[in-house]
Amino acid sequence: MPTLPPSILTVLQPFSILFFTSKTWGHAMLLLTGTLMCRGGRTVCSALKILGMKGENGFDKYHKILNRAKWSSHDGSKILLEQLLDPEEETLLIAVDEHLERRRGKNIKAKGYYRDAVRSTKKCVVKCSGLKWITVMVLKKFPWHSRVFALPFMTILAASKRANQEIGKKHKTTIDWTIQLVKQLRRWLPKRRIILSTDGGFANAAFGWVNICQKTHLVSRLRQDARLFDFPGKQSGPGRRAKKGKRLMTPKEMFKQEDLDWKEEEVSWYGGQKKIVQYLTFTCLWHVEGNDPLPARIVLLRDPEGKYESIPLIGISYDFSLDVVEIIESYVSRWNQEVTHKEVREHLGVETQRQWSDKAIARTTPILFGLYTLVLLMAGKLNEISPLKPQQTAWYQKSDVTFSDAYTEVRKVLWRSKLINGFAKNDDPEEIIDPIMIGSLLDQLANTG
Image (cartoon, rainbow, N blue to C red):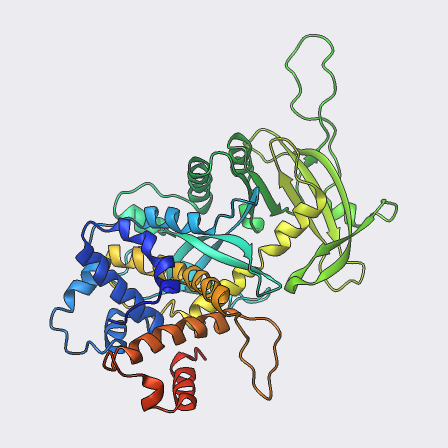
């Protein structure tokens, strides 16, 4: 096993409390190190092979870490979240979204058939067999990049309705899981100001009321035909108090009006750029059948240049403290989670694992998503020692350090540790091998492309 440098060990050490014995923790560290170093499929065998452990007879003990060992991924999520918290920042911005992991096989019980958002278009809907995950990410900036990174700290397996029916278990929808998530976050962070940024699928009245009760803030995209009402007037005389006032126009109808007083504001836009947008905002009641009218701030957003679709946004807050810029920038920032979903597939091998047991399936994907965050935290430690630099070629120049650059630097450190461990203690590898050759070798081994 390579001796891990302090910059790597500092990030991983807090997770040692998850395991009952140091022996199990040592096996987990080996498996984690091998997963970071290997390329292609992220299987236990691949992780052992890259560490030179092809002759390991007791290889089954590494499989047991995933399918049998007693440790809690829930507790691991809390430890990872604590590493992402900045004591100087009052607000924690969190993105929540669904992720489809394409998996097939009769032994994968939690799978279902879902719409594949990556392959589907407006005209053609593609469905495939897979596992639905709810990914929860902290939106955070690093000093070495201009854009916001979406850092996963919790990944929840949402079993299909059919799978739950087969085992006689009550089915939980995505909204049910997210409501439970909000309550959990509030227990973990009782005093932190939390903003949840979601897409339109999470614009649910019951979910909005939970955010108000938990004193968290919800930012989402609203339907174009949403039923909006004015606040009720003063009650005069006996009778039941009205819950809502006069019916307002739908967002779709408002966008067609030509006499509205649109305002302009410069906000942080996609790709870390600044952009002038036009908006119209007001507070009202949003009513969905079966729920009490929900107080909310509505922001109608449009692009004066006409390049982007006009969309209505909703900000749900117990005290209306979300302002217009905060609502727009919180919603725009959530697109970074799509980048994260793509990069965990390309660089960390999500959808390449081959575990069949229920426990291993429920653990492997959250670990790989968590590795994305751990890699960036490790890169942050390395950046404190020596500033990170983007990989440059004659045909491709980039100014910012991307995830692939950060991952390459982490892999270089791991490979250097593994290579140096192969020399005697008194030997200097750079005296035995040409330093230029060492650098070239590390580049080839650590390259994630």
